[in-house]
Image (cartoon, rainbow, N blue to C red; front, top):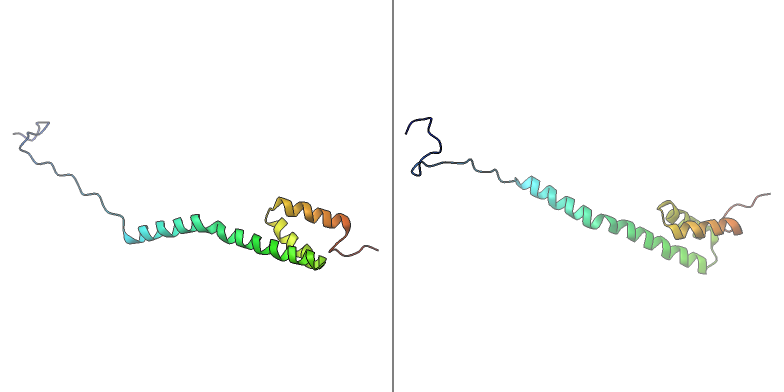
Length: 100
């Protein structure tokens, strides 16, 4: 068989290069990324849940200053209901400084 014949005969062994395996750092990075994607929003939900509970307790105790702070925190996080309640508190003048 000459060097210019193609396809090679059935007796000729053809070797393909072995594909490199991903290293342990790549696997670790993928696991960390998956954990962050799956459990990252949990922290935000916990913070909102905690602020809602504190806001409800302040409302029952008629502590409008604390209720205003918690509603402001929730409104800044993008909670639409809290934005509405915060607007109502502004409308009623609860938890804000009084104008002279």
